[in-house]
Image 1 (tube, rainbow, N blue to C red):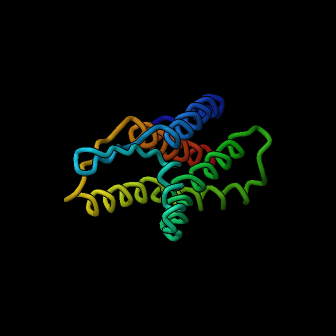
Image 2 (image 1 turned 120 degrees about the vertical axis):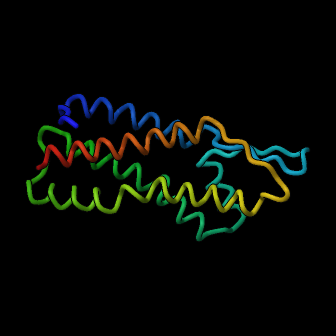
Length: 155
């Protein structure tokens, strides 16, 4: 894969940021319980529901890995792509941390959360997937690809 210019990467990262925010608020799935009751969830509404249900551990895990970490990663990528970026050794450490630990966290936790919900509700409810899941997944994949390009620039 050829190396893409930082200017182009900044524009793609801006688009990715918009996709990620849309993925947070766009409904991801609708749960239909006993044919009569429908409830749609976005990432943010699902996290809010975990808080209201006092599922604090899941609230923290899903909130951190699906919201906080992607936003932090985008901020770091914008910083690394800026023309007046940090000291080269600091950049290298930051890139290594992002590349090694950040790429698995977002998508895997989301998939595990959906799996847990579908297993728990399988007998009493049906789940229908909506655009929010695809938008969020596209943002996560774009973040991973941009990170790969930023690492190539650093090398």
